[in-house]
Image (cartoon, rainbow over all chains, first blue to last red; front, side, top):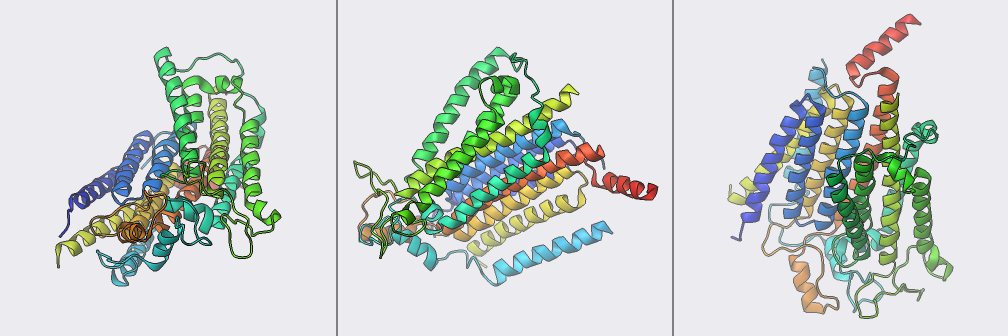
Length: 85
Length: 259
Length: 136
């Protein structure tokens, strides 16, 4: 048996990411959806960090939290904000 | 009806995932004692002074594979990114020449935000370039640095408005020129060994060709040969591509407000 | 069933649930921007899967970065016995960039779609197309 604290953290982070994705898919306000998507990316980045892939973490943080958010924000500003049922 | 189709397709995908990875055991049991053979070979050869013909002189595994062992993959990946940017420009070609927001007046966010953003922009540039320079030693590299660099045009457009960024000289033509120039330099580094009598994408000396990029800096810091140069050029190429994309988005967004 | 198997099953169920939720949003939600966001979530889940494939459930475990710059055989053996697989992260970085370029292109096309049809709701777009076909 070896130390498992990092694996417990991995389990918790993945569980929270599932909740975030559920909220994100349910959300009708697209700006809130983008913020939830960024939060989900942060949890995934923590999971990738625990899985010891530092290159992917650095690239993923910049892309998923920075560039996707900015890209979709621009798109929402240009188009419509609310999704109808 | 759509719901039924969605449910069936989701279930099929999920069962395929479950069957492929748990039953067939592609990833193996939860505690693989041994590494897969391919990964083991990469780790063994990437900085090994004893194996002259196989080493990449880079202590960082991903950079060694990305730019040496599987370099052609990465080259084509760069081409795909370039193609996506060109496609986006083709969709919106006519808007780029309309030159909106030429007042040159800074009417962005408040003074405090602008002062803080100035520091953050410079820090981001320094971090991004550092990622590119040390990509062969520590995690980081061309793509990471370029993606971090892309935060700069976003901040400029959000905080200072696009007109001010244009007055600073940040136009889509220049960004595209940056992209094309560094892509050309990248290709030049790739075909240099061919001109010198070796193989395409050659880094260190191989059997039949003694050409070799410098593997070590003066104080024996690993340079990774061509990996260092390729990382550096890729950094500016990716940064140029993202700058074009965000300038284009900013132009579109400001056109909507102007109408 | 030991603790290891239960943990592996839990992680795998979460990943399947995330992928399924992203697929649900991709197929059932009408807004194109939400479809794009769900597509990125689906891709991100595949990155987690790739990282899990390369990971080694043992201790100590280290990333694939060699700390010694002139390693001898003993250092190399210890490094190989500890390090995670470097190939899946490499593929993941390629996937991140390809996915990013796809997303950029999709967002531009979505804005173009809004300019043509005045909405991003695919059901409304289908109705408008049907009306246009009826007029002709």
